[in-house]
Length: 410
Image (tube, rainbow, N blue to C red):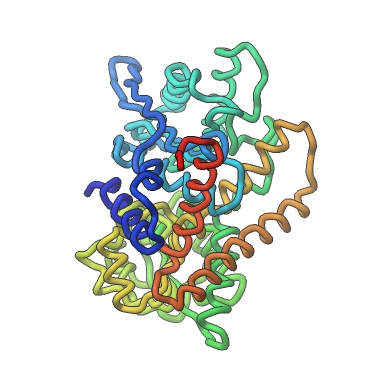
């Protein structure tokens, strides 16, 4: 499945809705820069990419993922989403993304470090706090960011902690980053529930993906009184109609067990979880989980895209026809990049800001961004989807910035 084609279709829809000219739209139909390389390590070769999609609003910003399925189309699409996400989030970044076609789950720590450093060796000239700022993504973490920072500073001969975010606190990171994506997703889920599910009791939730974001999301929703009835990881899932004991399940998962082996509940597949009869479906796994093949079977009326691109273009159209409400990824999972912005700003200024202040600022930005999207959706008399409302806001801002810079004439 070509994700770039899906993105272009979505942009074409926005162009038609808003009457945007071909000249204006052209700036969002191709990336600014694609850097490719192959990392050669102990006789093994791993394709790698760093793609800067747009820089009208500021330096590139986006994570680096290590996954055997990484390819150029995926990285390009993720960089596109970061462009729109950062625009909608109202932070001074363009969009970028990186990836290595590599499976860290079967690698030694030494090999993982070598891949991390090699990535910087081949791409460091296009990275930097004022050029393009990486962060963690799928199967990358604070330790990998630490190795990358160290390698970058060795290559450049200077300290520059702002060149990468998602670092440990000891290297200039901030504690808030750990659950920021889930916290942002939780905040907009609460706003969505207040708008569409006010007064409903025992709201049932299923969470696909029980990694960092999905786990924290399930924890927060459970603590707030939502009934989390199903969760899944890459090996399968568990379902209990009366609600799962999420604290016990988290402890079980952190002990190294797949959630499907949990002592209470019924084992289910990821595909079965998507089609459960629940109120809210949280998509916190990978891209292309809901497609035209299974979209008609989705029973949840409200979907939260905590992952990037979990719903294809064709599936989006089917869900919209069936009156399903989708909170789009460019809003739902933007908490992570907003907190990355806080980290970057601290690294650049040398100021240390109070964590309670930053948590409140994250909450304000997430709620404000939800409200702008929701208000536009209402203004359009609900004839567009929430995703289209978010895209309109994000695309318009990028195009205005391009015009102000003189890159679009007339």
